[in-house]
Image (cartoon, rainbow, N blue to C red; front, side):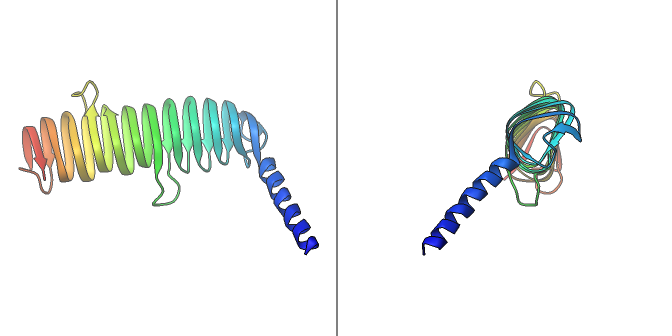
Length: 213
């Protein structure tokens, strides 16, 4: 019995040290693979990418010209290009912010602010010139072009009116812009110069206001 307990304790301690060894508190990247530590590691702390840096999963502060996470990201990313292949839990602020969401059915929660923002299934805010959600947007898109497959929330043109809003699936919420287009509305309203609901609006095309319930 004592041998089994000692073995269990040894295995647990080894697992802790193995996880700690896989996660680095600091990463400095010039241009991957020229970086310390290598890109196959997790980061729990700070990463600085002088040109382009890559890692696996990251929790913390990500700074630099271009940063890439193969897995999930939790924290704040500030840079020219911020890329997360897995889930996002936090904030991306840069010229281009990209969140792939990983496997189908996963859900990101956070904020993207930049010229181009792209996400899969996002709960939160996209604010920029071009905002795209390829699965579902639960929250707010605000910019010159806002495009979501399914929308549960709001799409607002810049300065509330200067924008084109597109929902290529089902919309629940509101669209406010110059041109608003929705495939289907399941409880919502459109306000703008031209409002189009392809399937179940009050009318297929209306100026000023359109909707469906």
